[in-house]
Image (cartoon, rainbow, N blue to C red; front, side, top):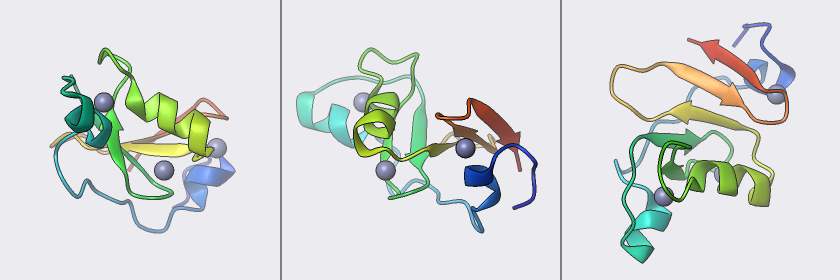
Length: 89
Ligand SMILES: [Zn+2]
Ligand SMILES: [Zn+2]
Ligand SMILES: [Zn+2]
């Protein structure tokens, strides 16, 4: 997609949606979440930074997967961690 946001976001041809509408790490530990984000590298869905465990950010750092998409209904945006770049699509 051509957004001029950053090279990682421009390299995404089709946005991955959530396989399930739940944080896969919170489910394991009985945690709760506010909003969900889907990793565009591996398709894993995790909770956002407003959630107590911030699994999306933890995953991006640990796995070095740069770009997430919002997994919320009606939200169409991407965010790149290393570039702090945001793009709507
Ligand atoms: Zn980037
Ligand atoms: Zn979580
Ligand atoms: Zn990932």
